[in-house]
Length: 231
Ligand SMILES: N[C@@H](CCC(=O)N[C@@H](CS)C(=O)NCC(=O)O)C(=O)O
Image (cartoon, rainbow, N blue to C red; front, side, top):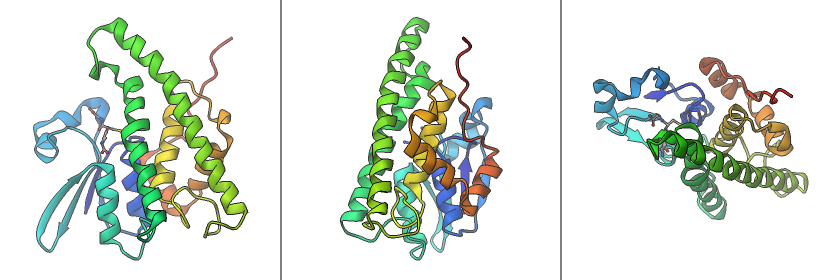
């Protein structure tokens, strides 16, 4: 298997899932800031010019899989012992509900902040889009904070399995990796993670998990990039 990833990008999610599952895979670095996702070779792999891309060379040949939600579900089938998804039932439904919300709502909201040029080529309109999206993003992080608080409370009440409270269920997984990514992205655009104590605690716990620590080291990530505005 190969995973095409960019440091700190959403590809962190399948990157963590692969490591957590104990998979043997080749991580392939794509430098988004150098436009490597737009080279002819990369576009031949993924015409959408984005990471992540998983190439899975199975018995039937080589499959190219894009989209985090599809990659996560594929890895669940490939590594049935790893518990990438909760077992079929309401817990799996809730997991997929949250993963879909992260991927189709929180993530694109950040795209409006980070790449407003995707939505208009007018510089003033880009600034307006960015400013508006920062407000929306804060609200979404607050919703994520509530999910983390609820998971911690349910765990404390003995209603969740596992040694520690995770969004993904009994052990850390895709939802926790996505949550950390969103918090980190927020810190890059002036949103202080300290405003979201349960989310921040979850992210700090997650980077202590050895499989995740390997990803953080390979991607050379700093968890919190928040810099208070100069007075
Ligand atoms: N819906 C896609 C989103 C992928 C995505 O937005 N990737 C970003 C990095 S977080 C990217 O490659 N951006 C580069 C670009 O669009 O030029 C998925 O789930 O994989």
